Length: 166
Image (cartoon, rainbow, N blue to C red):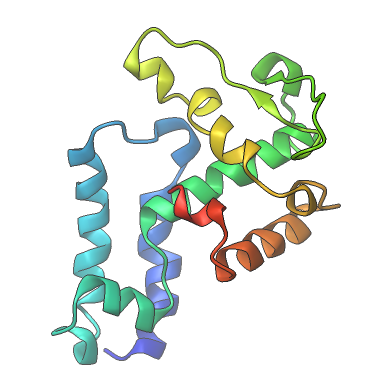
């Protein structure tokens, strides 16, 4: 199988199963994360020309990000949808907005709730706060979801701090 045949098949058949509702069931244990990533590792070996290369090289040549990056990106996009009212969820009941008195950052800063238990600290409303708060003002102020995704891609391509937190 060549690269041109593999990518559409992988993106339409395999990856949706790996990413389905990842904001809800985000794997907590490293072993679970490795099991998911192992599926993508094995799938990228299907491309005959890339078999002998390392996993990182295969991803780079195929233009695929890691599944961990995709899950974090999906989380950030979900936060954007909640805050902008694109989903039928009340943002105030889901997130605690921080009063911004400084000039740094953006106006949609979130306050991280206290979590006594490890499982709570890895829940959606806790795990995404630091990443969301580190986004640039221009990214968060996007007018629609497509502009937000484009800005995230630009930030990642520039090597900004957002993508290195993953």
